[in-house]
Length: 105
Image: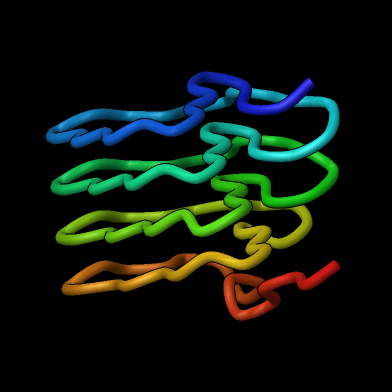
């Protein structure tokens, strides 16, 4: 069970002015899971999602994630699970002291 709200494979996603609140995945990516995909999130809120790995976003295999002008608030585990992927943050706020705990398998 991956990606409580969105699970993308070989995709391009652009998300604007959206909210991902209280989504859940058993394994990884409480809100979003990516595999070999590109994701741009702008002016959005990611809050209180839940998963074993990457409560907000999990990414694998050459994924690219850009988060701009957004707020990420997670209250459990680490917010991101990254495996062979890239993350870029621009003008975003993180209200979680665990956000730096990026996990590598």
